[in-house]
Length: 156
Image 1 (cartoon, one colour):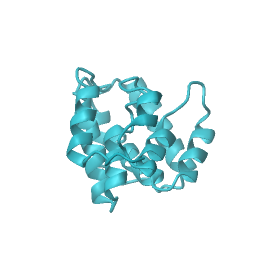
Image 2 (cartoon, one colour; image 1 turned 90 degrees about the vertical axis):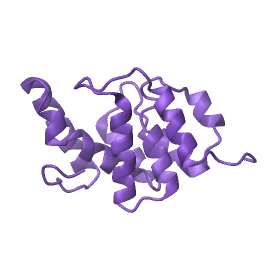
Image 3 (cartoon, rainbow, N blue to C red; image 1 turned 45 degrees about the vertical axis):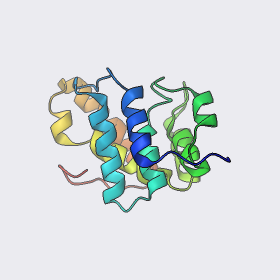
Image 4 (tube, rainbow, N blue to C red; image 1 turned 135 degrees about the vertical axis):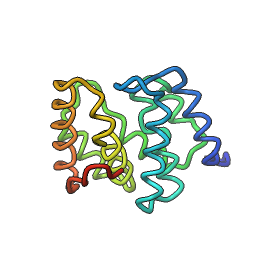
């Protein structure tokens, strides 16, 4: 890549624009989740490449940006690799997804922050019981696959 990588402020603006109008399962603006994951990465000691990946971690999976965009984006190779690792493939087993995350330097920390925010009891509390139970199990399974201890309620 000969191009200067986007700054964190530029990546944040891009991510916010890409997810504009999207909401999370609780109906909140999706950018709130991205900001929380990026802040969680920063708080966990993540570097700027990981923070950039946190802002973009769902962009390709949610069809906000394309794989072609990611391949050509003015990002570092490491940031691109982390975003790619965190992008679930259709029909992919959780075990395969976790193996790719673990094999990609820097990706596990971003996923840890994502899981922490997704598992926040305050976020889960507004969801229907069946959805809350399903997601709680899904997040616990992924934490186990990644070798992450369960975080205390309210962390993340």
